[in-house]
Image (cartoon, rainbow, N blue to C red; front, side):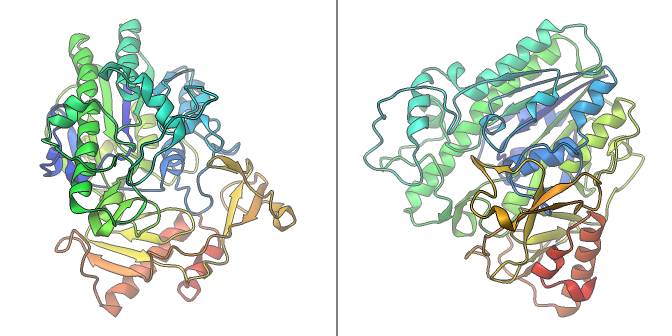
Length: 485
């Protein structure tokens, strides 16, 4: 048995032609979809980057108990369970967050790993003298990326193309091998949206304004032509990634690997590019552009080629699914479900509703028709994060007020003692109230419903799912849900 998991960061489902979009050219994603099962009702779990990966590696939702952070000592992970059964694991990636503070222990779970430098804030190109920044720009720029981008002279120099090239070489080097799990993780089309000018030119871009290749992460204040340019930069960056995905598909053709290889393509979350009046993610409601994800799965052989399914699924389902296909039937206390029965057309569904969000913000639910964003009160308390390794993005936690940290066996699913650290964040100003939508008639989520009876039913379903997912007790208080428990 062989499995290849392809993860493209910030892959917007609604822009892909396989899901009805017409804004981006991705012929190789289409090519994979033609010989795969396409999931139409696949949803976010935890976001952003590292919470999403902890979900994927553990089969459990992370966002109810901690924000961005590492694999914890008590986590039972997909690579570990495979390695215990002599299944070789390898990851090739340009996702630099794995190698920053707050991204510990993910790649190190694999038998081997390959990291391709240069994305975003990756401290790769080293110069004492600071680089010159553009005189005019919208959104963000970063000194480190200004240095890194000097190395991207040709398309093949860019980090995501190098990641796919590495995967191609790995497959050739291991031709004839069996029992392996290969994870191919491209950071693109995550911002900054950077690619060769000739690819951008394919989208007819003639923008002449200030540089704009990195989202503001806020309300849109830029002129319409700048937002159009940003969307085209996103599209071109994704097209570049798609070209190199095509080289991976070519080698599967060459090695005749489709007959005995499970191939999965998905993402961690989407990215707002002007929708709802914002660019970025993490600070708004979890709109469909962020939370409704692509999932494309090729089964060994071709029996299920081209089939579409509407079953409600999440990335926490990938861990048990992959283990199931490798013959591993015991995977610990996971929240996810094996999708094998759905993939092989023996089951119709694995869940009635899905829970999703990011730590300290709304807790959200969908049953595939309705989406509900449950907003915390403005002070957003009580709120604690639970961990053994007290790191988050670029920093250590608890240094400011260590006397407020408690330790104990606070998590319901493990006896491992953890730290309980108060989380100070107030509610985002962009989230002012709970919202309920019927996405069958209002997919863009522009017209909230005012239906007290329906909202009450959805709230009760939300509370039941939070209990099922081992939510810390204070989350119910923070969200004003104690009376529903």
